[in-house]
Image (cartoon, rainbow, N blue to C red; front, side, top):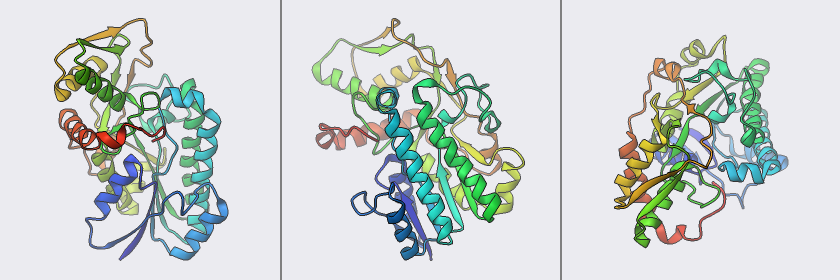
Length: 324
């Protein structure tokens, strides 16, 4: 029986990993709420690992948010994320944990990275300024795992997801990402009987989206790969693995699909006075496919699953938490 700690089990990705692990007979899942374990506290994290005798760690805990949140709270984003990953990775090593999976973000790649983005693009150019503090924290997490592997011969792996969405997403009107923000906007417009929904920009930028259940499945797949097989795909280049669908769509296509899912009867109007952002962000998932995993949830199916969850939790989402 493996004793597995899911750090960040109440977040979108952590909760999806937790659901999948709980379906396995040979896994004893360990979780802690924030009030029971402050992951920014070195002493508290050390005490936890020394007492629990953990075999595997999924490091999904993070402070996350959209452009507005990253611009407004840059100090919190870099400090909290650095503290959490430093404490967990180091104290896991100190307690003899041999396997750990660190979850990063596609924002680690340069703003003008070659498309689709391959793992070797890391540190090959300037980061997007709006989320640079968060990206630097995530890059530090990758390098922590690489360094502990080199010096201490542990097996700490990193996965870099594309844009994620799904159950337990953050639907805050200002601090959320594009899919939950757009879903809420279309839903509220439908309830009000609006004749149109306004979407920022021209609708031409291309983005890739991965349902969180696929992300969780990929994490468990990568965690449990034979070390030799994993190393063949991650060395001598970068030690992290991209996780995505390998397929993108325009923001216009996303909006049209969202309109269909929400059953909004009005029109979509694009506010071209608003910025578009990066023209394209697509992950190269060649390595992951060579390791035997491909995404299975289509965008339409994923949005339908997410909207059903949104409707089921509409009452509690009225308050809407400000963090993911």
